[in-house]
Length: 568
Ligand SMILES: NC(=O)C1=CN([C@@H]2O[C@H](COP(=O)(O)OP(=O)(O)OC[C@H]3O[C@@H](n4cnc5c(N)ncnc54)[C@H](OP(=O)(O)O)[C@@H]3O)[C@@H](O)[C@H]2O)C=CC1
Ligand SMILES: CC(=O)C(=O)O
Ligand SMILES: [Mg+2]
Image (cartoon, rainbow, N blue to C red):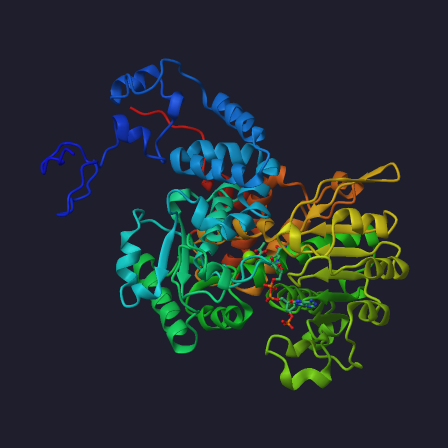
């Protein structure tokens, strides 16, 4: 066998001494085609092919970006398996960023379920097997003491938003450890596609402190630390080092979005850092804002004010108590009643039954405000019959928990029951759209966390909405970033919620929808961003001065444009 030459010109000859990896700083020729930020594939013009040493590296045809989009969409539609579509989209993101975003933006309704829930859930479960090139930044216990250096390894300097997870509660799929990375990657691609934040300003991060998921630990392709989760001081110190390093490296105005942490850490982290950092927990706060918007919009269909309604949640964790608290805050503001009184119209059921005062001592702190005076009730169906809610919200992470009995009981109590099955992905949805419409004889106002197709029932077509925080966080984040806001406040969540509810048109209502379609999401995000920024200026928390006169226009003008640029 031939021994590779020590000083070979061919990089593929590797010897034991190691080599220094280096690249050109100005991409041209072959490197340009492999640089995802600048690659245009067959769309490079004749002039660009001459100027950038591309002659011969591409076949002779030159095609416009629109035709590339059409071709890719045709290709994607050939795949029967959603995960194949996901992998094709990730390949595209890694090879031609602008084309990825143009495709996603122009076909958002079709592709959101591919890059986001439900497919991203399956992608995380199989992440170790499917990912070809690592995306995002991995910070594990091995990096303790070196997190600032790790941040500096990231190639982009002007980071404005970080989505970080520790992988312990990935959608309703539980602890997926390091493979939770699919979530920050997916959320940040929505920051760009839906909210117009520049991709180079986005940093996905996974903090790996181990996993308690035996399946992951025994999977030979698992990519994370093979150990049980670190907890207590070891956990707190690593996260703290990360939080300090982030601010040191990127400054006061860096937005950190916590995503899919387990509730035993999520509430504490949010509280701990909300007065020192620009932090936001999407599962607690973004979800709250989107659900409040949907319920407020639904009032147009069912009548009454928010305070006239009675809410029952299945699931009293981050999403459930987060939503409950924002609804109570809105009721208290609108009716000038005390928050404690506003909370009395809201009930929550957890895995042990209805949350009532006799359970107070043993409840986690975030559940205590919801421990109202009432006899204990074990089952959801009995809680529905007793509490008689007008709005039923599923945030349990457990599929098929809105059984026929439960949905029929809602239909017996209400002319138009509002039923929101928020748990993701589709397998964990509390009920399907078809079940909701069929079991209520077409009377339900239904939305779900993951998308369902329209349902035909007795000759009528019902279009279910998607109650997902994806409506809020991209525009919310854009509003914070464009105004240089330094802290998040509840009033900003209320402003975002109001902005979203205001985007639901009569045409949407006529179809029974309580959310506008995602097709118009960039316009929706611009409106949300404007309202959030306006609130930040009003509260004196915005640092980008002077305040632009037309904030909607300003938001739109800040948005990332996925069309190719001409190269000199
Ligand atoms: N649509 C959207 O935009 C969003 C959807 N979600 C989804 O919501 C779900 C929950 O997320 P999150 O709140 O963060 O999770 P948490 O783990 O914080 O909360 C889950 C809650 O559900 C309760 N629960 C679990 N099993 C049952 C059961 N069989 N019956 C009754 N209650 C049960 C738990 O009870 P106990 O406390 O007793 O353990 C807990 O209170 C996930 O599927 C997630 O994907 C989350 C955020 C946004
Ligand atoms: C949508 C989302 O954030 C979740 O399911 O966790
Ligand atoms: Mg989440």
